[in-house]
Amino acid sequence: MDLKTENAAIADESKFRYKRILTGDRPTGPLHLGHYVGSLRNRVRLQNKYETFILIADIQALTTNFEHPEKLQENIFLAALDYLSCGIDPNLSTIIIQSMIPEISELTTFFSMLISVNPLKHNPTIKTEAKERGYKELTYGFLGYPVSQTADIAIFKADLVPVGIDQLPHIELARKIVRKFNELYNGKLIEPFALIDKFPKLAGLDGNLKMSKSYGNAINLSDGFDLIKSKIRSALTDKNRIHPTDKGNPEICTIYSYHRAFSGETLIKETEYNCKNGKIGCVKCKENLFGVIKKLLEPMNERRAYYLNNKGEIWDILLTGTAKAKVIASETIKEVKETMKILYTLP
Ligand code: TRP
Ligand code: SF4
Image 1 (cartoon, rainbow, N blue to C red):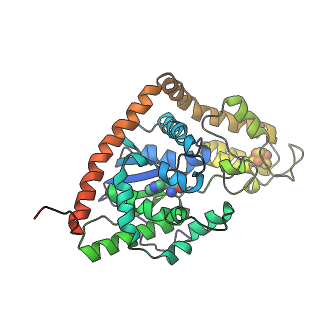
Image 2: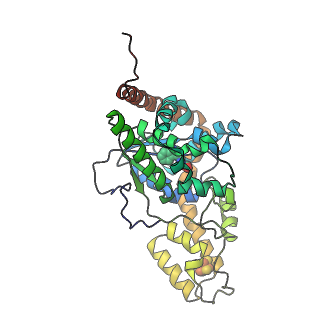
């Protein structure tokens, strides 16, 4: 998708009228450097600027992992641990467990009347995802997850949703549903904007365009340094380079793309120059990268160790965040019902 194309759903962050953001993840396993580059890093910055809500979308996780609900509790814990390790500050960001706010499911049901099945079936993100997962038939829940995501956003009255460009169709859909609700019932729900992080997706260690747990090509934030070192050692570089003096092409090298994501300007420039001119070996270049990643992860590991020793604090943070969110959600659902004239009162 071309970002330059004008898209009404994309927010201009320089306009300061936005107040609240909502982001979320399905708790399906450990978060990796791709998540860090694609969203976590940005969230840590955004929490200083906006009122931030982060939803651990356990119900949405069931749309693909319904056979293993017993894994959710551990995965919710791990997601929260990853967030806190990365620098998500519970005093600035509210972390919410989706299934503990039944009002979201209620709003999902109301919204589900306002969208027909066809646009969901033709939603490019749904299609790609279904194909990647090899789904021949889609469950009602999977097909409808963009509707439940709309409810996630609307119930908290978020103006902004920081997402990757692949999620843009969902934000467009959310706007459409909310607009329809407002027009139909004379409602006042907020049409959200997408806040697109322009940093390109992080490639996998194997050179695949996407780092993903399911491709087994990821460096997890929770990986130990020895494991990370060996993963980096095995990562795909410019295959045509055999000797350190061979002239390389950094543009086709995974390691170089990681340098671009994590290293400082000087090291990025040096790497490009040295690679192109055969002045550095890939082994050394990978060592440099490892150094950078280690430095990035060290403070995270410190926080991780702290929380692993104080697991109860994580559950406290989750329950406090969810309780705070619950207050907002129940207000919104009351408003929604009033708007729809289904907040029944005794005659
Ligand atoms: N769809 C997101 C994912 O695939 C998770 C998510 C659920 C979300 N609800 C959301 C993202 C609301 C942004 C806003 O991980
Ligand atoms: Fe990649 Fe670095 Fe080797 Fe160049 S020197 S091919 S950038 S690992």
